[in-house]
Image 1 (cartoon, rainbow, N blue to C red):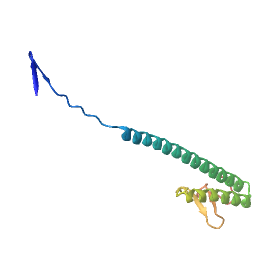
Image 2: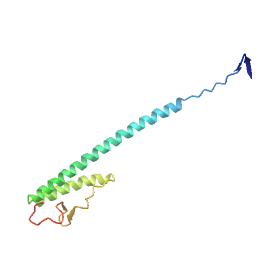
Image 3: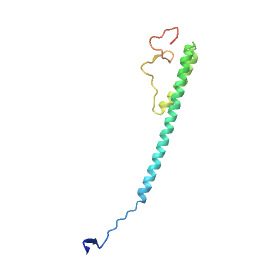
Image 4: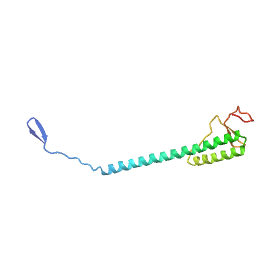
Length: 124
């Protein structure tokens, strides 16, 4: 029903719509907290992965230097240590794979990064 007042019509009754948003706000805050936790977890995992890859690369570089110095036993130990780091990563479902440029001598498990043009006398 409208009441006419001059040229304007004004409603006689107003409908008021109210909604309790407590639950919605609580869910929004919980979602924000979970998003923060997920972001923190992703950052921590990325940090651990970078550390593991850096350690693995360090041992592999040491192995290459040890091979160049003519110490295959020390190189083999460095590679085994790198593999143990790779094993830890693979338990997380992540694998550090050799590139196509790498050649591997299956008899000693050491990666020769010098490729097919390397000479038996060493040198890169």
